[in-house]
Image 1 (cartoon, rainbow, N blue to C red):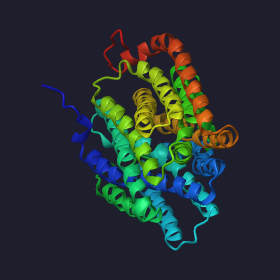
Image 2: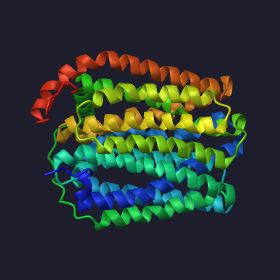
Image 3: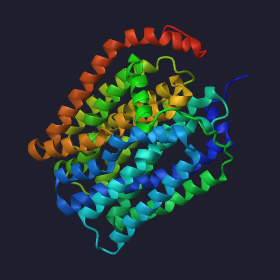
Image 4: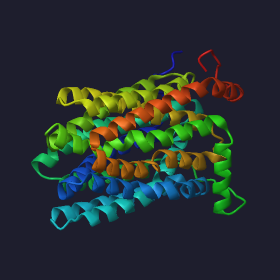
Amino acid sequence: MKKPLLPALKSKNYQLFFAGQGISLIGTWMTQLATIWLVYDLTNSPLMLGIVGFSSQIPSFFLAPFGGVFVDHFSRYRTLISTQVLAMIQSLTLAVLALTGVIQVWHIIALSLFQGFINALDAPARQAFVPELVERREDLANAIAINSTMINGARLIGPAIGGLLIASVGAAYCFLIDGLSYIAVIAALLAMKVKPWKHSVTNGNPLQRVKEGFIYAFSFPPIRAILLLSALVSLMGLQNTILVPVIAEQVLKGGAETLGFLMAASGVGALTGGIYLATRQTILGIGKLIAIAPAILGIGLIAFSLSRFLPLSLFTMLFVGLGTILQIAASNTFLQTIVEDDKRGRLMSLYTMSFLGMIPIGNLLGGFLASRIGATNTLIIDGIVCILGSIIFSRELPALRKIMLPIYEQRGIVISKRA
């Protein structure tokens, strides 16, 4: 009997999750675009873009490990309902301030910081909840890949709609639509039939359990290597999210529509990568993808920074999106497949810390460098560092494969020369 192409979608709970998240994520990407455009419009400062980006993500760096302990100990389902309600309040507050015309940069920074606190709990809970949504463990990799495809499908649609909305009626309506879109997520979560949470008795205080998570992750070379590569890519490679508005206005001489199309082009590349990962039938060979992804991203960033022609810029952003999603989703799939269940929340919180947690520092660094040497030169440096990271990881890959071989055998994964 032929295996279905997308087996995870056979699960009713995963179907609900997919539908609710899909709608909400379009709103989230609209808000992200509207926020960076509004900040740049209010201040005309690359550094201020970096500060806003820093404030929205820095709580993930400090609090994600404790969030991981929390979601290993409490119901991930109830945690997600709570974080979605809080995120809805945050977006609607932003909308009211923008619609009434009283919004100032400090409001955006404060609300971005609040969203960062929500994300520090929401991200590890969401990552650890996915295995509860699929009926069979072997469908987990497919569920993670579909999740990434959904995120990047929204990343394609959201900015394109957001750019047109900003240009026609203003950024405030992006915030309003985002706030209302959370209703879809909350409704989908409430419609799920989830098994009662089994409260596990744990020894040690939260700090000790955070320490256990760090020791587990960093004493195992394959996990350590992937977390460090993710941190490097997030620190340097993802600075483009705050520098694209500068390029759109100063280099390409465009407006909100140009910014929306550039973000959408990145989304097309990411969606392509997500679809490829979703249709892969095995985890074997995923190390090669993780190794090559930062190089694709780096080449895309350098080419984007050198382009002065919008169609060429759009083409280069395809590679930025493709490299980004291959790095994020392939690493996530690998970690979720090999992690022990009782440490899933903590490991995914460390992954959140290495991925989301490094972005604010990168945003601050990118904003500072762009204000000193220009956005173009900053992106060239980012691209070179990503390519160097790819080369170093590729050289380590043969040794990491040897370490993984017994685990693949233990998990019943068929081993081939590509493993």
